[in-house]
Image 1: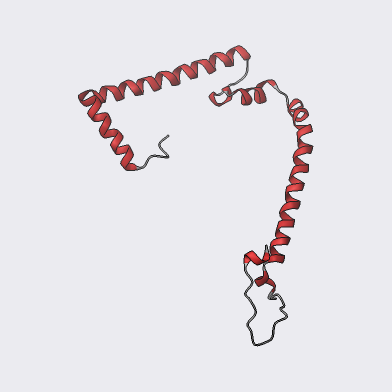
Image 2: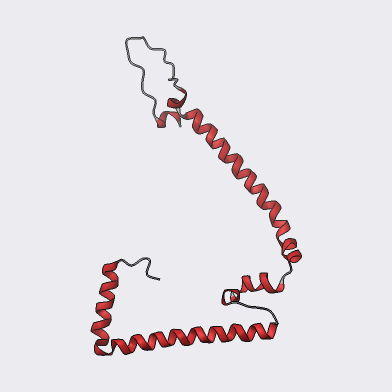
Length: 139
């Protein structure tokens, strides 16, 4: 929840809360904690009622619609039948991406002049130094 706040910002928020609520800050914190406990109890009661109605064991994480359908309404065969058409497309796409990746590796290794130790040959005399190869020349 606070992963994008640093310690100074959290301290500033606490100081602001102290200034706004003053002496009532402990009571406000207590009311907030009571609200969280009540929400947890209501969620636990709702999952219990739903479990009794459906006759299956339902956890709070199962209330997400996709997870609920996958776990409680579809059998393994149904799920496999739904995934089968997409699996072929996924396999073809993965093969294409790996082929492109291999081709890019080959091009990069061919373009890297330092790895194979050769320099481009020039038709100039031996008294002038050969120009240095750069990345821009290779592309």
